[in-house]
Image (cartoon, rainbow, N blue to C red; front, side, top):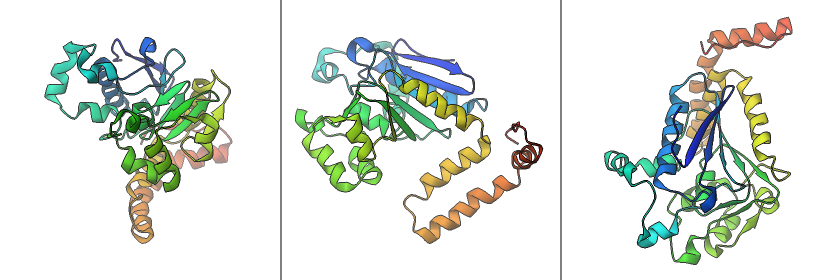
Length: 266
C-alpha cells in the first residue's frame, strides 16, 4: 500500500481507507497529501480485491481546503514531490476528484471542518456521512478567491440551485444538519462515529456483486447529462452484460440456496 507523510492508507477487508493526516493544519491540502490521495485512487482502481473506498480525515477534521499560507508564498511542505507535479500537471485535480472518478464507490466520512477545498473534494465522492458537529462551506469568495475545484459546475447539479448559489456567493458555514437538509450529505451521525458508519455502508457494498456495483455507478454518472431517452439506452448498454456474468448466476443461485453469495468478478 502507498501513502505519504500526510496521507495514510489502510485496508479494512475489501475497503481501502484513505485518511488525510495533517491534523495540526486541519488536514489542509499539501503536496504530500495531494500525491497520497492520487496514488490512493489509482491503487483502488488497480486492485480488484478493493470493492470500496472510504475517505476521511485525522484529528477530528476532514479537510480545511488549500493551505493559504502556501498560497501566499510562504512555502508548502513536501517540495520533494514537485517532480510528480511536473510529470503530471493535472495531478492535483485528479487527487481532488475534479479530473478523476474512481470506478469503485467512494464514501466520505466527515468530522469537524470540511470547508473550501474540503467541500470541493466532497463533491467528487459518491456517498457522504458526517458527524453532527461537522461544518461545511465554500469560503473562497470571502478571501477574494474562486472555488476552482469544480464547485460552480458540480454543486448546482448536486443540490438545488438556490442553495448552491447561496453557499457559493455568501461563503458562510453550514452545520451538518443543514448540509443534510439541502442534500449535500446523506446522513448525520453522532460525533466521532462517521468513520464507523461509512465502513458499515462500505461493508454492505462489498457484499454485493462488484461488477454490478461498478456498472451501476458508471451508469449513474454517464447518463447524468443525457436526455431520459438517451440515458435509458445507455443504461441497457451498461446493464445487460451484467446479466451474462458468472456473478449474476451466483447471486441467483445463492438466493435459491439461502446462503451468502461468493462473487469472483467473473
